[in-house]
Length: 229
Image (cartoon, rainbow, N blue to C red; front, side):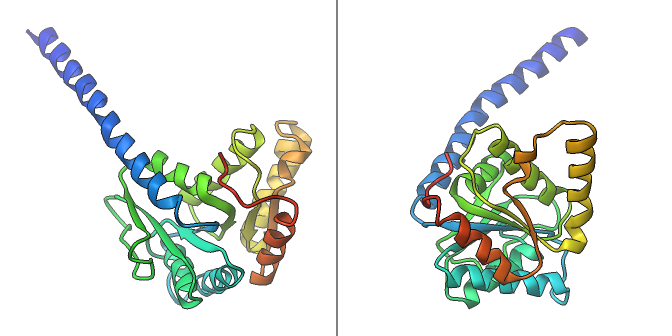
């Protein structure tokens, strides 16, 4: 009897997994349809826990203002902290402000600076990540936690393995990112040889909004603006 119950429960899980395909497809279709109409954007990543009086919150606002002033839109994860700051800067600069929201049991809620017609909701992290990568012309990575690191290293991996087109990855704050990149160079590259020198070519560390725009402009004098895959 117990064995039969196990099999019954397992079969129910498999059935639910099969039906989940349609929900996943729906998220992809909705995301592709909306994002394809938005135009060239730059994604801003960073901690959801950053307070409004933190220096990096204001820096993210200023970076986003500069980005929209140059004609790009801004995409964030749609939540509080650095995400809110990125949308706020885009909103204050009169530019496109996109939020890719994820349903989480804590810390995530829509911020008020997303354009009303450019707020997308996702249940699946992996669908949301595809939207970030496909429709971003660059990643601006502010100080953050595991989620920020996840987005950063996924983008690097996809570019390294030539699964997506190249785009600039800009880390903002030498004091925050300097130690990580030093470790990548000394340990991954030099000591163990687990990466190649050219894998680091698209990663830049800067400290000012002007430097962010300089890197974006320099890159796109050589490459066309287009979806990444």
